[in-house]
Length: 271
Length: 271
Image (tube, rainbow over all chains, first blue to last red; front, side):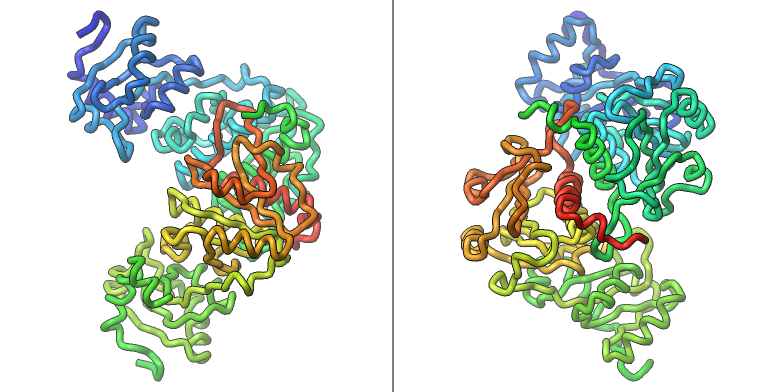
């Protein structure tokens, strides 16, 4: 065992417990799995408390990165393939994972003018949908996510996985509806709701000031209370017989059009 | 039992077998489950060969519709709750399902000028992604889907379910790459590829003629051969550190922008 490697012992159980909400909340930690995701969370500079590594399973290009992390003082837990599989929730255990501190930004520190806009949600029916939305939001240059319901956990491993690393590039804020409303009023920032009944096409909403785009629950949409918070409400017109889009798709349509209207598409680096 | 009700007997096994590709191909049938989906497939006028109905489980507003369907000569199989649950693949068995004839359009009958554009795919990694793409495409007014790989089955129950009825509003074409290319050349129709390396922003591609939008496999993207078929290739610029969007989200961004540029958003009925 190398100098700052931890014994695997207790870590397997601790990691398994992070699959449960109460444990995540109590510890303020979450679990990130897979080579690409771990590379991205290290790159984003979040507090990685442990790296969990299985040399047999992990792709060889990771060795160097893990060595670097160890040198930077990150504790590495070395696991056998069997041990790693017992904590893995992926289809194929990739051999690398991390325990990462949840990055919360207090709403009073959130800058309404940061990035393209902010995105807010209350509840979502599907963790995968929320994750896809975060992936999309980060790709479009959104500042962060504002979570309005305690029930919704952006650090749920299913959300993290579907976000494909997108969550690492977003500020995450928890606020009540009242706190969000007061924050938006204080900063002269508009809350724009999305609803099939919205009077304005999403391509025509007013975008002169800082924006929070508020998405409702997948089936029920925005509640009366949420609609009342909005300074404008936009719809995505449907040409076919569909009555709605998938939540992640709706976010993509709306956020990338906002990016287009703000001239952000032309500035984006080409790959 | 009413006049044209079938005994449940053999139907349970036949429906279960439709979960398998060889059976779907051999019979040219597929399975549709759930009240909303069944209502939409009836409304779309596709050939429903059997309705499978469980009065105890089904929502009461369906009774009338099932009675109407029976009057129109559609055979109804009455199942007990236990029998219905044995064929259901949904989280909650909804009590209504249909066996529907697959609707294929031969490529020579496909009108390149129909609808907003055509969408083409070869393989997709996830049936759910393909289904979400169909839901999105139908909502945007796309004419239909062109499937380039025999492996891809748009009538897979997971695709049908994720399409949320979208598949019923799309023409479905199977063609080889050569057939698609010849068809597009014959009609002066452009094939527009999507790729992170595409030289043109999706908001700037040429849209003066009929279009086929070609999406590559989720991770590998378009193959060299597929890129060679394209008269233009477009990218969705990424502002954040993401290297791609989810397939359904990418389709939403691209197709709704095409709809915007063609003036289709303003014509869409408001709900």
